[in-house]
Image 1 (tube, rainbow, N blue to C red):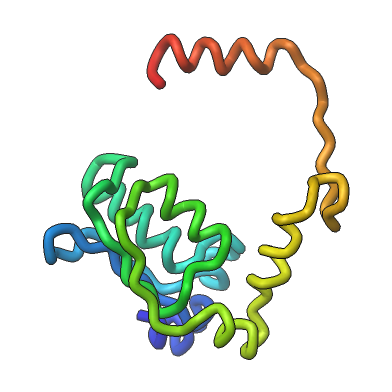
Image 2: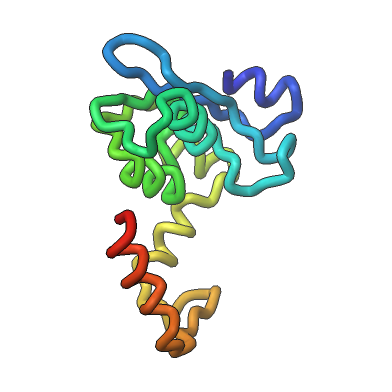
Length: 140
């Protein structure tokens, strides 16, 4: 899949497969260029595919196999999907040597929000918390 992503000019050299009890339930290559979407990493797309196939946002009991150590965004998606294990080939160090900037993003995330390159400011809105309350009462 990672090779197909490169050969088809769909995205970077990444692929991922989600497995449950030895059966593939989701898979994807990187689709960043194909979809014109910087979030269309192989792991995220494989999670989307698996969730669609399983009709669930909870992939507990599943494992993900990736061509590379997942980036910070993909790692967060793996946690949100409740995957139990990650298997990968290329390391973060390998990715850095080829120009992928995961290490820079990780360093930024460790900083307090007011010290990051991308500024983040809270806008107080009492109505916003009411939506959280409603969601909690209705379906969360």
